[in-house]
Image (cartoon, rainbow, N blue to C red):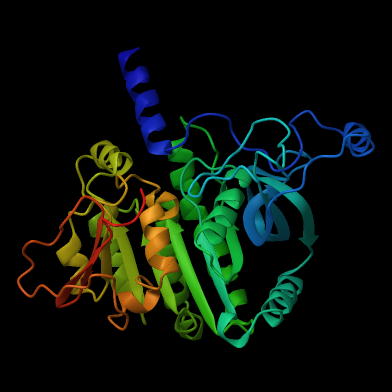
Length: 391
């Protein structure tokens, strides 16, 4: 019994998610008749404050469940869709407001509409149409890969929240891999992450065929493992042209064994410009390391020198808004730094300027203040002092 309780506790900590499980737009007991009745009701639902289109490629199977149109089972081919996600008027930056029944658009994230596409070519055409609607400097794709313990609604909403709260002008693309979305099924998710690498590699090949001038790839937690395995697959299959189309790769709180990560990096040729966000205060990764026998995780901040050795920029968020497992998407400090131009992908390549920039040749006195981002670049360290921002 003690062991079972411990595993349950570990699962909760790793999930970084408590409360109701999200549903996309209808409750789990919905039927065509009940939906039609609701639409015909005199009192119409409130409108969302904003709508974020999210283009989805998923290795989940189709489902007839109105609350989750793609389930936790693994598909032998990619499925494609567009989900227009409503951001509620009550939205607080960094939070995904959700409910386990029928979302209220005034209070919860919810799908406004959804469209399925029958092929990868149709998906590319839709992405090109979305890119054409943007100015020349905004024709970029943001591809987001979610982490452990997410259902389809959870991860789709997170993609929309991330794009909306950071004010990104990119076309949002989400890779939804078949996580079980269950606290106790960490091993199923780990196996699904292995399964999902080919699907992400296929999505990146499709993205490379679009008109996008820039392709940004972001993987979170276990999704970082999927990301690295997809890059490795592309490299081993001699898809260097696709790898060269990737403008930047960001791994946020990557749940990857550090030794394994070194092997992955060595296999990816050419390695796209890459940044890794770490935190020594990430309790989820600390527990993951204990489960795996004390092996360091890439995102726990213990391997910064190793990452620098491979030319990878490191963002240390240990003292940024608590530095928890989801700080990349929830931190008002990071949003402020990105919105005022102090922090960008160019910064990770050493081309940008950070707010309060300081170059520390000897690496001492790295962090000053309780809310400072520290950026380790190969050969030097930059600090973006953020203590003046609202927390």
